[in-house]
Image 1 (tube, rainbow, N blue to C red):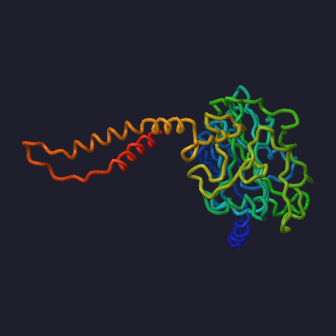
Image 2: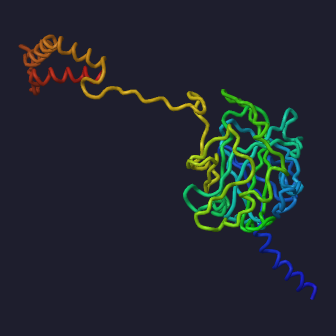
Length: 361
């Protein structure tokens, strides 16, 4: 009887475990970093280890910071201002993520002079660099891209003007399937340790003041994005919770102010993401306006000068062409005549010479 009850309990618990989950991997500019399983030693990871696949409940919960009893990771990944960071998730049984409705937000905080390996995230001043809800103009959720397979990802861009240093990324899935009533929302936070070793040429100050929050405290239990009775209504607008995007955040490629995107492949930088500006331009500057090279014969002063020179030298070109044609028509007096060759008329030869000059413009 006891064995039967145990099996029944496990059977009832299995769907619940499958509905929860943890971060499974991180890609930084295409380089993959696996995330630890719950309770796994985080010494060989850049992701802080949690002890449960369950969601964090309540906006005042201390575990809202980096996840259930999160332990500091032993490694720090190299990145750069403007790097693309993509993240994938797994359910509690190690399979594909299941939740589709809700927000995906990303925060960053400086780890200070001591570095992230020893940094207490409870003291972190987080600034928001990305927020995703629905694809613009649709009822399709960015979070749903995580359900496409083990390499389904959402992604964001590290602000290209962040100064060098070590940073803690706080990545949070806000599952809203139970968020129609107060206290029903499920939070799945995860923290990643990175190092920006190459400073931006246009480095700005690290956000502070009203742009930063701590966790708990960064969300309110009744704000939009945490409590939303209309979240399943077609055409409803979802607003991710927390502070506004920091001023240094990068705009979303789809035109929204999210600073992120999604992809179903983690092997490379996800499609649709913003990449770092090239060294020839500074972030935020516009691309150089293309200059006309001049079409046709009168397109530029240089061409006009060359055309004028061709016209002036026309008689000289014609004399050279006539002389060349005359020599080819003469036969040596004491040698066997070579095989006859076609003689190009002088007019056509003059045009050919002019054409070659024109092509050199």
